[in-house]
Length: 226
Image (cartoon, rainbow, N blue to C red; front, side, top):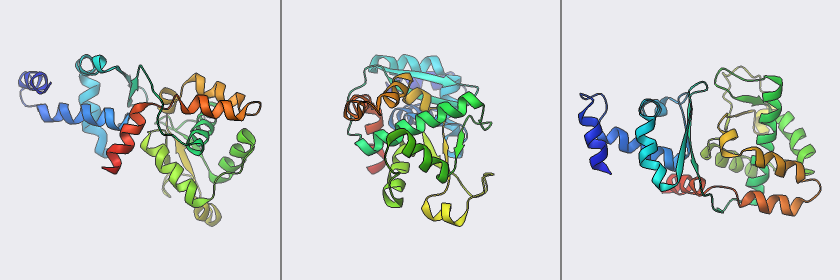
């Protein structure tokens, strides 16, 4: 495969090297989602966005499809043959609730220019309880869930300078979050159906949805812990 990238790079007069292509491909598979908004991801985003066909040619035989969203400027790698991963019930529920919140934001047009839906901690508490019948996990577990969601490319913690006022109570409890647009790719319409089923068949909903968490999400976890 390195010969493929070397041949491509040789035709570009030094614009990108074979290492740039290899690094971008590895990063996309390991992290699943690459956002242009993140400074350390812009080179990888640019390489894949410009040479989408070449990356698709390489990754397609591996069972991975590429979705380049040029409007919201992110790239997602979606396995075509998803297998069960080690997502816990808590991780699954949290991801489902984020997907439901993103859908609500989409219907009301509450997007940032990067396609994110902002949610403060108080609203998240209320929606989590409403959607699952459970209390949002305490700060320690919540922080761990948010780290997992960030690793999957579906959410991140808001910074203080991002236009959402965070009260001392909210900051102590976890502050606000931004639900990221690639959640639509990572957790599609089936996830919304599972969320709707939660109230009537909680165990089945969790089991079925956990089975849809992709292998690439687990690869991203392994990459981070390596």
